[in-house]
Length: 296
Image (cartoon, rainbow, N blue to C red; front, side, top):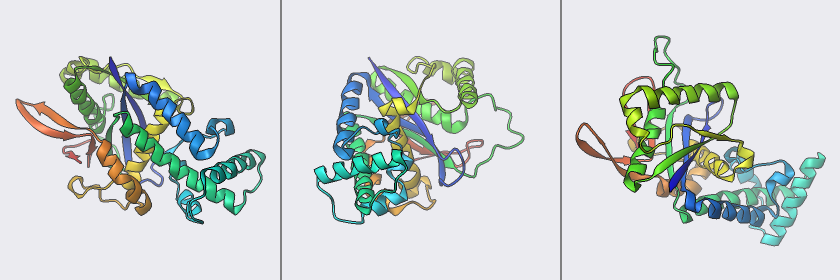
């Protein structure tokens, strides 16, 4: 039996996010269908409809957008029936290019937050684990950097943590990635191939990690959408002084989701050069092209 690590990224466009974060959630294959069904039920419960029917998907940048919090706070919590009815009207008007009413905005904002919490609750229920690595958003590759054909250090640390997790469970792991853009996807696959075939450590880790990622369209994969929400939440709402994640956070995201993130991140042990050390699933790398990494 295997674990699937659903991967996504946040802040790689270097526009507004405080960090560049890559990572996602690991789910055991035996729990995958149950997890998907739970998210489908939660989506119907929150919005009164499946979002793909309205050409939308469960993205963190949408569910936790600042406007969603503002809309949700416009009135006390609506009843389930009220929220669902007004959400369907909101979504229909979106397709028709018509302006929604205030109560429809409120319903959609509240539904978005209900859904975000439901995703985290489902991850906990089905024993998912978070693995993620953050680097500063303003880091640039030095002109003298010569290892461009290999994985960056933060990416290596991400796979390192997943490997130790698989070692603990004596199982294999598959990588499932959001299909973004073919040129960058191919580049990343080539870098992975070189790491897992041309380095001693990489070859050793193929004993647990299958080094051939599977790419899926995020709008067709609820687990990848869940990973997107988690990574976005880490970027904007998970801060810990011990790992120097000191960039400004969005208070509303931190208040509602930081504890949930911390509960789900992997905790275990790693080993190197004959010594054993504690390890966590969320890691901060100040410079992916130099030395030094810090753990949550």
